[in-house]
Amino acid sequence: MDWTSLVGLLALVTLCAGIVFALWSKRAVERRLDDPNTPKSTLAADKSSSATPADV
Image (cartoon, rainbow, N blue to C red; front, side, top):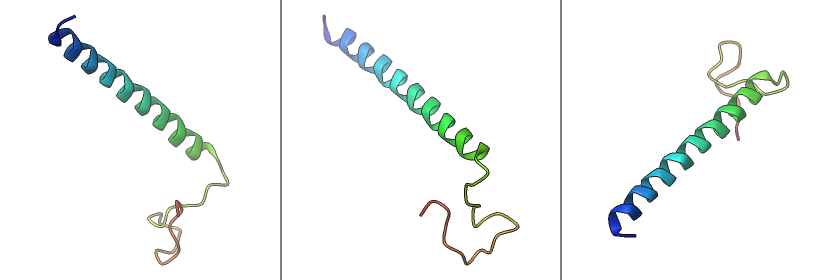
């Protein structure tokens, strides 16, 4: 195994890790959107902008 194979393997592993992280994050966002008890963002039109942020 020379260094070019190692670089290719590291690139492939990094790409796969990024894809897994993106899918995990997408599922978390979709779960949050589907939950009716999730607090609204301070950027929402029907919430006061002086309230504490939803994620804090």
